[in-house]
Image (cartoon, rainbow, N blue to C red; front, top):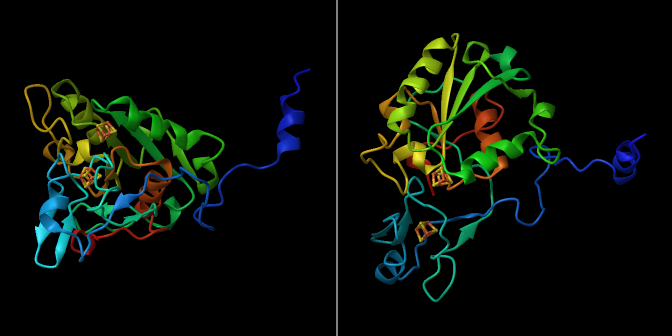
Length: 241
Ligand code: SF4
Ligand code: SF4
């Protein structure tokens, strides 16, 4: 007989208690930069390779929909303050009405890799790992869009995947919601719009929520999925830090 049940019982529960309690484990989130009022605006904005930092009258503002987490603005004399929360979900501009009460403990998600690099795929895959265990929150990954309530899409939407995304969206029953994860899904990220990809999920299907990040960590993805059913609050574009 295998010893794994014995070792499992001996080690105890390792699953995070988030969102009931803040997760304190090191490395649980890469963090993200915050706008700062006392930053040296010109020197700081020049650190950013994607143009996510903008000088404003009061200092520097961060456009998180373009931040690729290179961390160049994290260190040095012109560093910005960073926050380590995981509440990264942003309303995509539609008047999102959370899915009804029946979905709060039974939400089925169809994940589509629309040209994502391995990082977004790995973070999404970790949702099912023992530490995050999305099933404890009543969230399940489904293989068929016909069983899905949420379409979760990562990547800059390559030309080859446009039809697949459209067909998956069409096959989903109502009510349905669409969540784009990673800055590539928002605007193409480091790929932008080019000969091989359209550079943004919203050009293909209507999007309800964005989860910025490159990649967003698993708890940020879970935060977005819980926002779909109204169990967490998302940020509006105007409220972005
Ligand atoms: S971490 Fe984000 S905001 Fe900071 S320099 Fe890199 S891309 Fe720009
Ligand atoms: S957002 Fe970043 S991590 Fe995700 S697919 Fe794009 S480049 Fe990769």
